Image 1 (cartoon, one colour):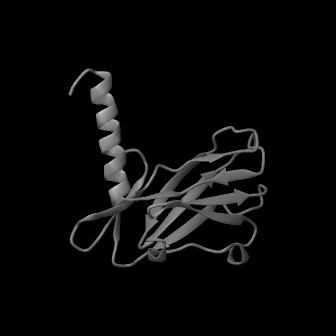
Image 2: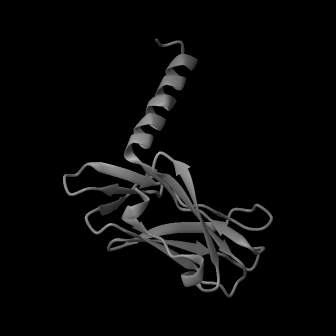
Length: 142
């Protein structure tokens, strides 16, 4: 599934670095390491042009194929500074690109890490099913 995305490599990135972690079963994390206040504040991932993107209520993004089947989701955006303090961040959709914007301020301690996390549709369903099962068990429902 990673082939459906164009993620900039560290050499293309400029004044930040990027690590992509394969989480298995098609899931991956893109860890943007933002070294200082002069670094870019927007980071993008290009998605296969056959997919279309929509926002989710929690701030994440869903990717759909041409038949309106869910392909997967990017979980809601997050970023933290060097002290572990949350940094405001969000996604915007620009055509077939997902742009994560990081809104640091004068209290932000660098470096900052931002993490778009992709979960393919089957893993999303498994997570929801596992959560529902756990909640049912906790409530004594069989």
